[in-house]
Amino acid sequence: MKEFNLEAKRRTKLTHGETNRLRREGKVPGVYYFHREDPIPVYVEKKDLIKLIHLKAHIINLNIGRKKYKVIIRGLQHHPVTDDIIHVDFMGVTEKEIIEVEVPVHIKGEARGVKEFGGILEQHLWSLDVKCEADRIPDSIDIDVSELNVGDTVYVSDLKLEGIKILNPLSAAIVSVVRPAGVSEEAIKEGEVEEAEVEEETPEGKKEKPE
Image 1 (tube, rainbow, N blue to C red):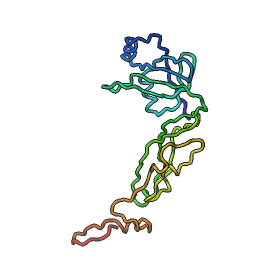
Image 2: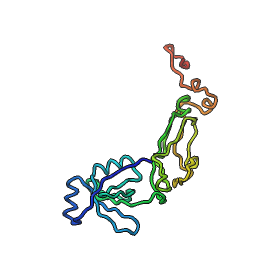
Image 3: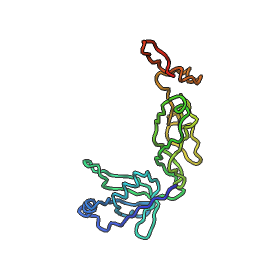
Image 4: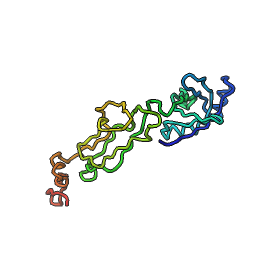
């Protein structure tokens, strides 16, 4: 699991005016909290927070002064008009704590059904919801589609991830290879895609199969 760091500073003034000043300066006010400990009001640079969000960072090392806290982003508040981030909640976690997060799906390889038979690869899910210990969260869930033929589908039930529980329905399709238009299922099974291609007209008006 990749390490992500985010610098934060304590907020000493909690007035409405001070909060607005921080936002005008490109900062996002927030709160760090962990179980029964007292919450710590903080603020972070908006650009750094947005970068981590785009990177799909799961566990973040939140540096507050000289202390480092492992956290996840538990909540974001957006401005109702501009959609800017105006507040962030950081929840402290331990390495063995069971948490639920969203993990991106990465497709690897070129499907046989696409390469040999002109099939079309369709990805249905771009991320999966998982439940696991904080230190076992994968950066991504990689699916090798090299052996997929036309008509094949990878379902959630096909994935076996040690120590990780996928929360999506087992019947949910993740990626599949569909049959291209104009090609029969029989032609694909027999490996005769070229024979199934649409015939072209000759100058004499007759039709012939393309070479």
